[in-house]
Length: 112
Image 1 (tube, rainbow, N blue to C red):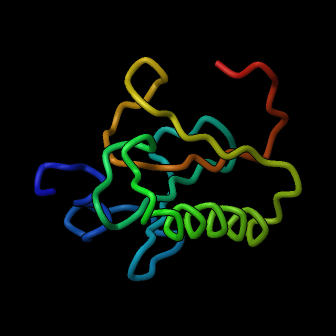
Image 2 (image 1 turned 135 degrees about the vertical axis):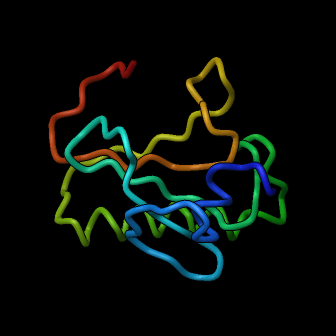
């Protein structure tokens, strides 16, 4: 999607601090981190939000989660949080599916 911020980041048209990239998944550091480790993990294919994933996206959903956990392990995180906001009322501000990997400090509950 031409006007999508995260599509443009994944395509390299907007600079980012890349953490991981393959043909289906792209991960980069958040520009406004909420924890010492705050990484966004996105599918390269535009999907607006988690609730818009189709049944045939199940493998991609698994890849996103597995890659996020692998990044946490690579960063030495033993305790971390993975967040997916779905919709403006839940705090989603960029409408391209993304997972937040947060770690490196204590994370309270309930969030937000």
